[in-house]
Length: 365
Ligand code: F6R
Image 1 (cartoon, protein in one colour):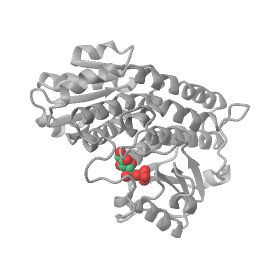
Image 2: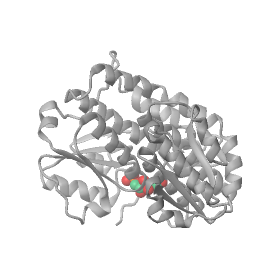
Image 3: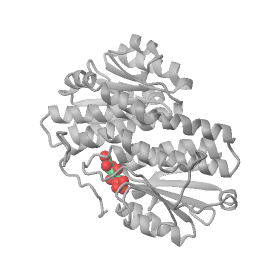
């Protein structure tokens, strides 16, 4: 059942090229346009709403932050992302003019489901992005987008995350085209670039040996930090969640611009800092942050595109990923971080698929 892999997480990491491909390409019609079968939202509704909330927990929340970036960029509408267990109890502004998007692999997460019910009561329309057909969230939502990742068994989410990002981007693109906020040319250009992602993800998977070297160097660490700016910060959050939940290393994500506001005090000789530098407009800033932590003794592992050779001067190790559009790079850059967490966990002799204290589906609060 593990198909020759040592654990489900490993199998699921390697299933990502297929999962991403299915989620995207099975929804394209002959003209190459995205068809969203179970979403019945039209232009008049999109012109009527004034904001979108994207609500989820854990990894699904981390995917939601990227969805927000895409929706704000392409649809030009304010999007707020929040954690379901916070959102429920804080003041929010859900009303008829709000589209609430819930992201949940299992479709059963208690806090996310509670937000669904509250939002419907307040007159909002609810769109669910989920992996499980017939789940509570799928059944109760007004509109559904199924991430066709296939069953995810390992507690640590991997293929659900990458397909959730693809799903949110596809929704954003379709809505933006409907609203006439992007041109057809731009729309098709991004879809073409998305089609290249599965083979780029495969390329990273094929280079997994290098991750082994880095895993050996951080396996004994007590702490590890993840640094990024913009979408790379959202990605840093996901990288740190993966590492902490299965390796039990204390891992935290920092927005690189926040270093001087407190976090740099934590850097000691040998502290591993995974630094993600995939965004062209933020690249120089990120490089100078890496320089700062390196000067204080950090063991810097950079994740960047092949043409950004400059990162070599400010890091101990570099994981190169294939080039792509800035907004698409997280789907590729997350792969080495998943592999790193997996490798460190198994080197520590832990149960990769069933980390202590955690359950796959959180149906109680
Ligand atoms: C982390 C992880 C969790 C889930 C979270 C939400 O690897 O898997 O953080 O993402 O519990 O679960 P779903 O997506 O089922 O609502």
